[in-house]
Image (cartoon, rainbow, N blue to C red; front, side, top):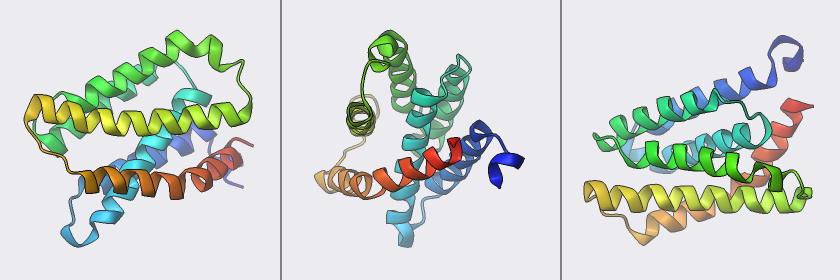
Length: 160
C-alpha cells in the first residue's frame, strides 16, 4: 500500500529524518531510545548507500554529518568524516560488493555499521576530547545486533 503512494527512496529518507530527529534529542530518561534511533539512522543510511546508491548520497552524508556534529558535539568533525569516508569506500569497492551473496552482503553491512559507530566515537575522542566508555560501545553492539535483522527485513519489504 505504501509503495503505491511513496517510493522506497522517499520512505527511507523519511525514516532518516525521523531517526535523526529522535536521536539528537537527548532525553535523559530515554537514553536507550535515543541510541536505538541513532543506530536506526546509521542502518538506514548504509542501506541507502548499498541498495539505492546515487551520487546525491554525498549531499545527504554532508548534510546529516554536519547536523549530527553540530547538535551532538558542537563542532564539526567525526560524523561528517565518517559519512564521507564510508561513501567513498563504497564507491571504491562497489564492483566487489556486486559479486557477494546475500549472507556476505549482510555480514559486510553489519561490520560496516559497527565500524562506523566505533570510528565516530574514536574520532570524537581524538578531535573533541569527548571521552567514550565501554558501556556505550556494548550498548551499540547489543542494540545493533537486536534490531539489525528486523530492520533489514522491513527495508526489503519497502523495496518489494
